[in-house]
Length: 439
Image 1 (tube, rainbow, N blue to C red):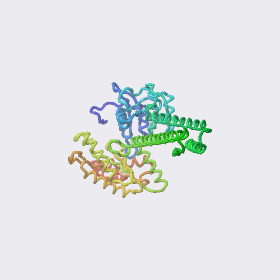
Image 2 (cartoon, one colour; image 1 turned 120 degrees about the vertical axis):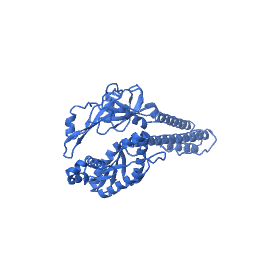
Image 3 (cartoon, helix red, strand yellow; image 1 turned 30 degrees about the vertical axis):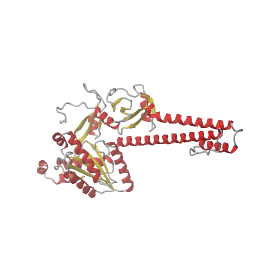
Image 4 (cartoon, rainbow, N blue to C red; image 1 turned 60 degrees about the vertical axis):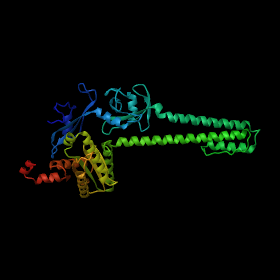
């Protein structure tokens, strides 16, 4: 019926898509290739229903997994890690590597894929499709039987730890050798210095590396005591280096976790993290019998803005909008980029009226703010749909649906406005047929 493409072509839909659309379910096709396209494609459909629940049609998006590869590449830029989006059977959909891997071809063996999908958070060692020894871990993709595999060369992943381990073993072996020499010279040395040395060795073997045995004599035992002290110092340095390496590894893991839940353009949380947070907030509010408000916000005429001022200006508008959202909300509130020019805010402990007031305040701030990066007076407006728990729904799906319907009503009324869930239905009941036709 309508298409964002320059020329609308028939869409190849999955089997039984119409049954799924009539039941209000999302339509998820299987990855495939089309014509000469070298990347994997997939059809995703969302049913469109009227207010009585009758099917009007399906909004279909054709996803090119090449864009997923660009996103993965952005996550690992400057790091010795590769990210791959794979199916449950181990077939590749997208990769952070720019070349050398072909989509919809086996990347992981069936056994390796099964172990990664059924395993926990511990990394798994295996051979990559190119025969290299790697360490990998997998994060499932919600609602899909896919996973994102993070791979790193095994030697690079464990090289520093192995070197530190070997150094520690070497130093411990030196300590044991020193103790043996002390025992050999037991009959020739003074009992007290040897006792001090033996006590120091016992403390080191128990894990205490803060040992500094005093040198009581310049004989062989005195020399051995000095060597022993130097070896303990080396052990201390090795333990400090190992602790620093572990801390660096923890920091890298923390950075990877932040990248996986953050939108790279706006700095807000991404869609995956949003759905988990929304489900958690519903459970918390239901448990404590407390309200919260959900705002769905969309930049008006964003495609026209992009076409007029260029995609760089559009990206700048998205960045500045995300910054304004973070500056405008409380520390307990939550802001995320849902996709494209759409943003979602969760306002805990907030009823409908306060939620509408906050939405109006944010809408006014965005409308007054200049979005041009070079000082040009470019401005945008937003439309906002508001839904509250439990007034408009007691589960994430119903809240999202009501807020989205309110957003649609705000756009229908002319955009640059805030509409509360339910206002559209009330207005339609009050309108005459002539007014409805005019609208």
